[in-house]
Length: 228
Image 1 (cartoon, rainbow, N blue to C red):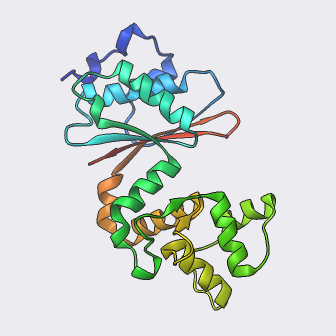
Image 2 (image 1 turned 180 degrees about the vertical axis):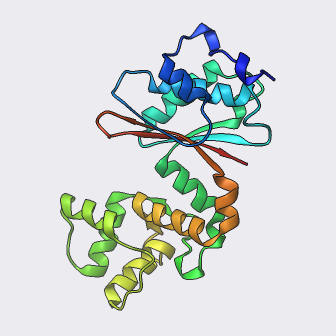
């Protein structure tokens, strides 16, 4: 274990003063920087600092969340290069969608039965979702309409419309004709509901939010969590 005051960046990497302060800082941080300014490297060094100084001790893990798959993969690769062997397996880099799906799959039984999807649900099979929509509503969805519909359709609100009830039943539970089929936004809704209604799940998953980094265009976000 390395003393915090004696820790230096891995591979002789030199961090700018503000970046070095952010790596060693306690508490929550918001960092805004443009593309190509070293955000990924700073996150990798932050993870390494947490592991090597014992701030993130076993059995705790670090979870990094990104919007884009490429960002998640790049960060995972960078951390693998920077972090010590004993800690690499305790770093997980996921997209928001992948995290939501993991929460849903692991804690699906924490949902009310009416909102609990079948275990074999499809993930945004666009063609089959459109077929379900046509089967229930008797009309087709254009591309722009479909994107808006999947984004705004709620699985959790009370509905009185018979067609909407039928559509919800099919996408959650399937029927003889269709397999259960959820859009990414629907999976996110259910994952958030699991977190909101199961305090132990929420507490166990994310205890400390450590770093949030946005690039200058506000199109991507990386968040680091420590969790057990």
